[in-house]
Image (tube, rainbow, N blue to C red; front, side, top):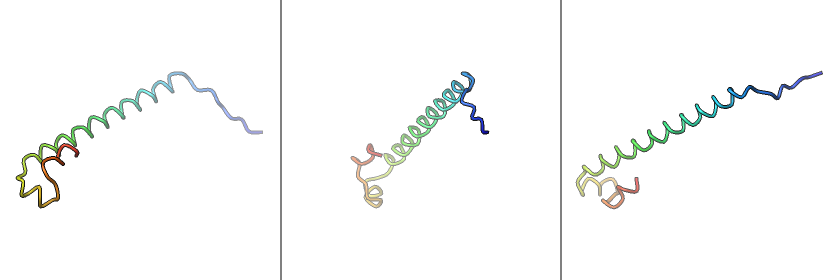
Length: 63
């Protein structure tokens, strides 16, 4: 006969939710910083350089 344990301690779920929230928050901050750095780097390029990679100034803020 098999036994399946369905009860967990409350702390286990809270800890998992807190670490998941922290990981999501850190991921969002890292993604925001990557977009910011990309926009700054693209803004430093000349119009000719942007044209070479197929962008214009208006496209920078959509990155």
